[in-house]
Length: 290
Length: 333
Image (cartoon, rainbow over all chains, first blue to last red; front, side):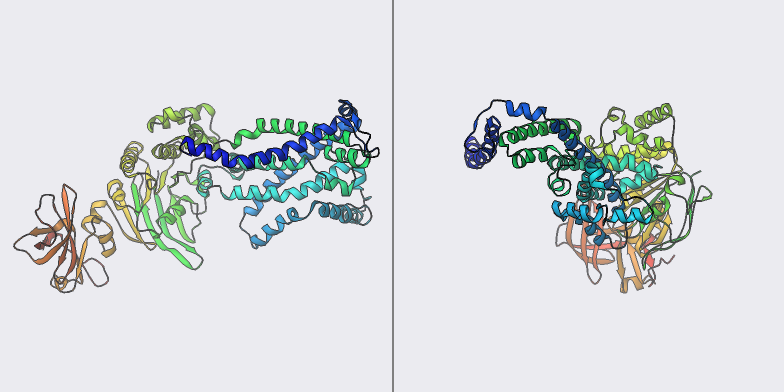
């Protein structure tokens, strides 16, 4: 792109794809904003009328909304904590030379390849079920009362299921980062008198900081919109104890048929996600530079 | 202080004996260079001394204490790696301070020692930079700084200059030699470059296939090589080896003559040949002469010796500096 001519030609060439992408984004966003300003209920077709910001007022004053915001953040932070800490631990273990390394690594990745609905159903019916589940059987084995996870600790159960699904992803990213740590640096630290713990703190963790940032950023994007796991296990309940923003919008639109309210919720969710992204980049985006 | 003794040390990887068995004495304050071709086991030997590899058999005695089973940090040695192995996320100051911090030294003591080391190595202005902001030579000096703050019994250098360009290498060679004069600490230096070995060493250990071929001062190795390998490895350009008729007349299987010990003449001499390639260096000229019935010989003549490609010349070896070897390749003295 050396000359003025080639530069303007290049702009002309990429214009169609840029315009297409722009339309792709603008049209749904504009429609959602438009719907959010209407009184639009599927049970009353043809009765749409302009409603101003009342949809937003209803959505924001709904007690379920604050519960949902809290639950969304709890799921994101809880899963991030488990996957980053667990991922570092697993990566450190898998980095050790051992028999059958290749097969073990493939097995570790396996949960990531299972569909969220399937994984959640397996957890619900085979592990957490208070009658037939594995955990109930284990509890009975030592003479304890089986614990009904999904009824008594619904949010924690969902965090556990989602964390189980994302742990392989974190492990994989962190393991590759770990393997790129220079062997001579480790040996130098060894000669400098650093024990295993010091080597971890002063050498391994700083080396992993970039990979940890990548894990946090990518996972946050997906964890803000966890849905399938909630739908097939708790259905947002009991009450709204395990409802996150995504599920609240779904409930508004397809259980209460209130498209206007759901659209307002969707716009609010977009704004909240942007706020989270802003703070996230401020906090940890620096490690991605240079 | 920093004497190191290897007793019958061997290292086996699987079925392959990298180092069959080595005995070696390194005296306190000596600058010892391990030199040999790639894969001769010189780096492995250094790593055995450092404790980064376990010995398969034998004992390593450092400063009179048996260190065979000691972990690397407890041996009182410090090492400069080929890749420098600086900690990339730490400043130069933190890099140099790291061994002291690990040893649990006082903050004030650490600061003072780091400043001292930085002054010796001309790094004072760079203390707050990260390694990636430094040039190759400066990184090298940081690595050396990290090694000297611990005041070790001995320094280990693993091909430290191989990542530097030629001019810088000559410079750093000098700096390391000066550092040795200043500190008077034992240094073990691994290289495949015989020029580095010759210029820096008090004592050279020539290794080949995990065995010590000869130990001695640079000039000892140059003047009195024990065998064909050492004779061929030390000296540049390589020593000429001649076997057959001319060797038999000296009661030897092979004779060796260094290029600088061949006298050239246009009209008389022992062997006759045709000049192939002449490499003019200015001060000297290296002539590759195809000698009749002998093969190609390299000769060093002064830069203004008037010959060109295709000339007929006569070569005469200096009889005082002729090296004789028997059929096993060992020197006859």
